[in-house]
Image 1 (tube, rainbow, N blue to C red):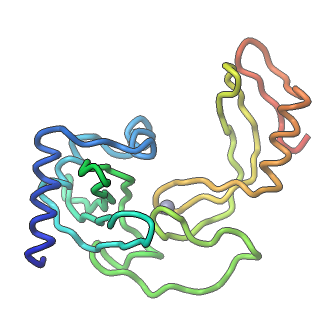
Image 2 (image 1 turned 90 degrees about the vertical axis):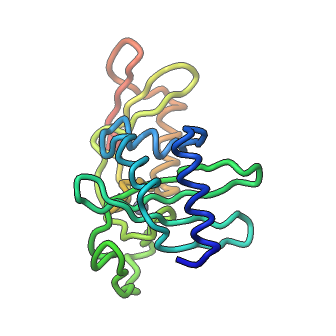
Image 3 (image 1 turned 90 degrees about the horizontal axis):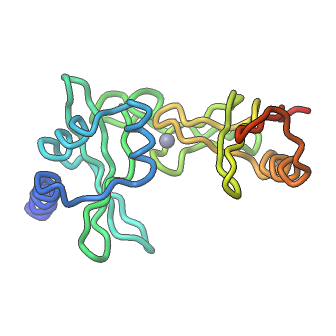
Length: 192
Ligand SMILES: [Zn+2]
């Protein structure tokens, strides 16, 4: 690592040790799904190394940190915001087809999948078409569940993408209150 990167890495370690950092909602979701523990993420950020710096014209640089927890590699993306806060953005376990090993990217295959989202905005990995069994969300105080929503799933970090067409159908169903089920959980079949 360069001297500059070492300074950033020390700053990241310091923020984590002081517990004066922030997790994105993505991170909280991963933690509640037990994909990672907070201790694992903190270990990676304290003991790991900066593998890549990602620059963006409208945002501050973000840093991909590689570290190990229980001898398994984890990548954690974080950034320093304009107020000098450490924000932990997302994390994943590096795997093919994006990563050859924990440090080496595989060459990208440029095939588009019939106009679908092909790469994850967050981790740049491949998106596979899936059907989401239960897509839950809150709307005007109620908890809703939509069954069988077609989506794109990132094979690496688990982010989901819903097409404009599917989103429109969902909104139309909500507006028609076309739900079955009872109490606060209202369920309807997406395909119906
Ligand atoms: Zn992803």
